[in-house]
Image 1 (cartoon, rainbow, N blue to C red):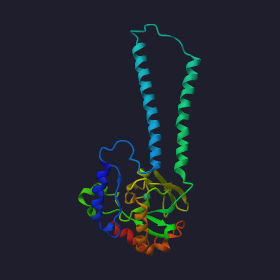
Image 2: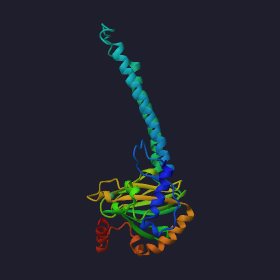
Image 3: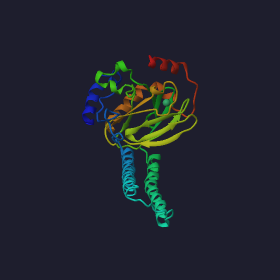
Image 4: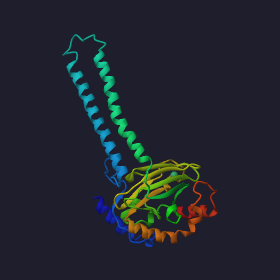
Length: 297
Ligand SMILES: [Cu+2]
């Protein structure tokens, strides 16, 4: 179902003016919420797969505990009701039982804690990054830079509802004009910074989330193992136009990525100067203010 969605999406996206300038990029899975979706979003890479595994472990533990407690409660209500048990026991202390109901929860918490810490460190950063992308949250759009691919940079704004093809209207507030493009199978180091207030870079299908904080650079990573487009949103309430910060990560083959880079270096050359000092937070220029105003229109 997801694959056919991806194909339809690809066909529709082909018609978008925003896509006209980019090479024909292969289409794959679509990482986005959909009607009747159950559980976590499908995994587009190894981090999300690890999150799924951990979520399944905790879910199974929760189900077992819930069944056990409910059964115990039901049995007590039935077995020790006044009718069946006219003279109640006056027992108020049982050492074995008390030790057991302290030790067992501790063991359960340990079973959860150990893989939990392992997952946190796995998500934290990658020891062998293939490329680095700078992600900067701004009020209210994203600014992306590729420092090791010519240091081009560009802004990413949502596609207005009336410019989406009719069958893609459900991607309103997810689809963007300039997507963040990454090669599949590559460990992508993501450095996040904030321009004005705290935002958060969040793409559920890739299992990535990091705050973007002014005056601070945070590191994390992501990897897509299949081609496709993975949607996310700023998930830190950052102001009145918080909704205006969708994220679209397009994962393509290495060849398509190289083609896109070659094209992007020319197309976004203008942004070269602005890309470097991502740590600094210069005052918004008239140009930026105008861009925001235009995009809102
Ligand atoms: Cu934000």
